[in-house]
Image 1 (cartoon, one colour):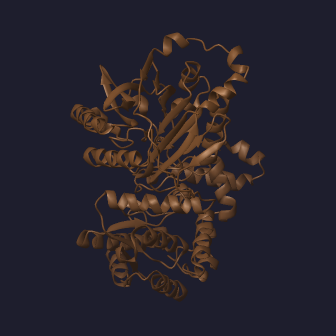
Image 2 (cartoon, helix red, strand yellow; image 1 turned 30 degrees about the vertical axis):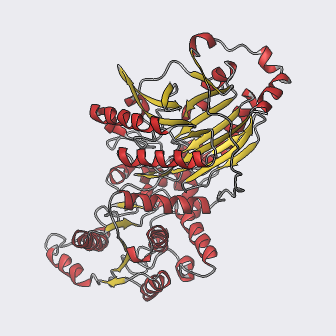
Image 3 (cartoon, one colour; image 1 turned 180 degrees about the horizontal axis):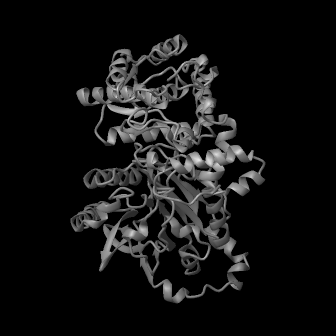
Length: 576
């Protein structure tokens, strides 16, 4: 029996921290060796962090990343490692180094470069044209990178046709809802179709708007799941696989005899035969209990990780949040406390003449529940001062949106003043439904450094609040906050439905229009009221200028505003 002990090191790397990432890789190599791991794999571009974006246009950055690979290689004694880095040869490549007995013995250049959604790899990299098969201790190993494995006729098929029995696929695959299930189904199919063991190691951690969820996966040659990494946490996933099982199944599989792989000889050119360390008894492995979350817990943990890493990786210690007593700011406060601890979160209540007694009370209860301080800074005096200053300019006009937005902008100025004075990062509290329709105030409630729930529709905000209360076993978010009708409280008796359709109707329309690119006609055909569809589409189209000026926020849906969806601000095309 040819047993292979595989380790998948899903680590949290920091873009540009070449020394820190290198030290972490070496640490995990040492941990893997101590567990008797034969082969340990690290995520895509682990040395540089992902995505490095225009750092890749700096020649020095490329050279220094290659120097770090030279630092890592000698540490790979009695273990084989697969490490993501940037290779260069007349151009630069998204690459995986196969390191064996202290030397880089082969390099795979990513062959399929994603250039959609949040990805811009064609901007930086040349695509690879060759893929290698290494034979180590008699076991055929093929290595490829992220997008490579999504193509049925891609490198995985070529490598297994060249007798690779184990495929290692290294990834920096960002999280979005439902993506984990899609990955798992695809990888199971790829393992089954190619009769190969497939090890899929994924990055974990937050990087600007992106969250990488880890959730590394190991499948056997029958497409059965063998091991799985934690979601949203660093993990070293170690499992034993029987490579002889691959050969047994292949002998019974007629597909391999009937299917020819065109171009195999031209593509698979690099076959390296190597010997591994002498066989020694391996320590027993403790049982694994992978931490994988259902919905909406999955989204909640993505938001916590994304918030923690954005704040910490940017060097902040404390955050400040404007607490209105509403559902959005309440949820952001709980996420912030879970991410950073109560000692690092400050709430600020900024009541106006229109703030209800209930909202003020709920903000106080919320901060007591979270054990965070609450500063109360009324805005009536500056509001009167602004109204007086503008009285001449506003003469002979009726009070309206301009006066309402003054209150939001005063609050934004107060929060930014606290940020400047104390070095606190302002977390904004607007949700995706508001951002989509422009139901937000530039330089007001949009002012801040990070938008935690920017990609969370309003209906999901409520689901997340109920989930967090259920986990706590108590109303950590006060029940009146969840029960009351949402309102901006910028004028007497104001309700969100005065300006927007009910969120139960609005959010499905926004999902179909923004995330699925459905047209006006298709939405009406789906049964949505034509006048509501026209109104929503108009609001979305007219507010691109606002979204361009919004703080970055965590992507959790398949198509977030920002890198995912890029429309011109000056745009005369209309859907309805």
